[in-house]
Length: 305
Image (cartoon, rainbow, N blue to C red; front, side, top):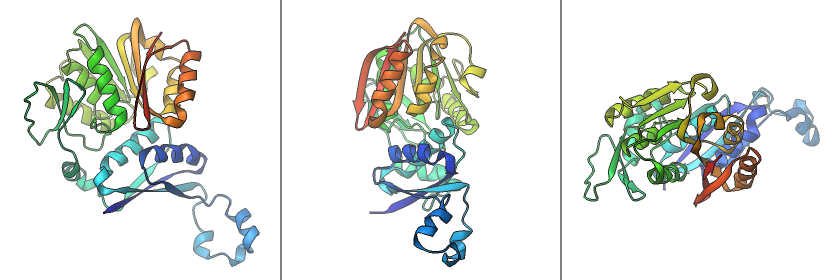
């Protein structure tokens, strides 16, 4: 089996939060280089003057999180997931992978990303392949580039299945943390009146716009770079947020302002260990849990005001 090492360099004060995201991303564990307390630790085993000079000169302001993943597990999806989750949580980051060069990103995607079905209505197909649509499914054609969201990750597929059960022609959709644009595009292809995707990452928005063009929905799909509160107005029938637990919990403070009275909020990206916390926070903010779905170690919820 071929393995890839992913490293994420983050500020030391964000190490615990970043490590939690890393643990969500890879199944084989992580280890962390953190030299913040080197002097104190060294005093327990030797005088600091006896410690190797290279070690003494290590950066004390950043830690490095090391992750390992089988290349067959889609390394690029994992890297995209990390980047988007770190950015969504406001964690400054530098991510490297020893087997994947960013300049070869698009070609590497083609090695791992193949067509597949989701739920009863949808199919995801790379833009460079053709799909034999014998089941008459709604086909989403994607070129994910460096943005998270091919539909293969459990968090995204759960959202897509919820969307296919809730989108009707009169519905408007807001997708928070849109990534590749897959949820907003899926909503439009399923017949929504319109969809807006917002993301703080400009490259993701660029990718999402290109994917909307590929799928012929650019006329009724808008993608915006920026923060939800600063860039979005109006109220929507369906609001989606496929992001990490910490951001979902913060979102509960004001997301109801963007929901119609009978609207729903779809939240996903919730790992097992944070599910109870998210549920309690949702209820404390006045939301009712209308539906709860689980796949692997991930949870998604349909919430109502």
